[in-house]
Length: 286
Ligand code: AMP
Ligand code: MN
Ligand code: MN
Ligand code: MN
Image (tube, rainbow, N blue to C red; front, side, top):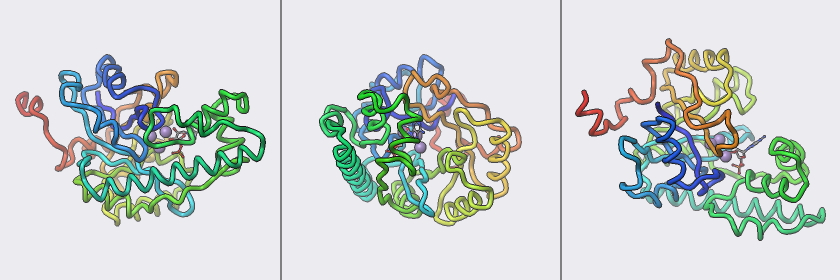
């Protein structure tokens, strides 16, 4: 099994890299990409001995970008985690995350809710996420669940919404490509774009040098997956597969809980990409 999108506690995931890889191994995942939001700290923390036998760990990242006033997530796979310009971009993005959290914290204080910065200071993450702020709001009784924390407080129409000025799609793609990576548009149906806008987004993405589209991911209706596969063929893109795993508690987004790619885009599977590295095991079994 393959899973090309997952998070650790270095961004808004619950598990350490070690726990994440163990869980993936138990679930039979042979190729796993760790793609934390705007951070490669998990990959810096992992040594070759930590990777379970038989597993290919793929160095990845998920960059937040702004496009047409919307937040679009771009996954980079097989990136060189030591690449200097990429790391500079990650530092800028992390800084924007800290500033946004402070801004939300100030808005909360004005409404009489204190303690966000202390709460965040105790977390192991390198990239502070609204997901953490949502946990804080639930913990303090200001929201019943994540969905409510976002719709009522943190989302675009939320009371404490704060917009970070993320990098552009072309900056993200350029940084990923310069770090020898493959660029993927993450979870395309979560942006609530109509077909024309989605096609425009993907066209701009491929023109900037982007490679692939997540066609199969958690909780995606098979009809929608087929539509995405059609788009992938039409725009001559590669097709990726990833759960976007954050925590074992969200069972419908568990590692590897994704459908197989539709037959008509199987030959576009990202692992057939010419720049996809072949592991020693694959070579010896070929
Ligand atoms: P950020 O990247 O800091 O803006 O935070 C966005 C993260 O919050 C996403 O990566 C999801 O993990 C999580 N998230 C966003 N919207 C929701 C939602 N409606 N319900 C639950 N989690 C969400
Ligand atoms: Mn997340
Ligand atoms: Mn995302
Ligand atoms: Mn993600």
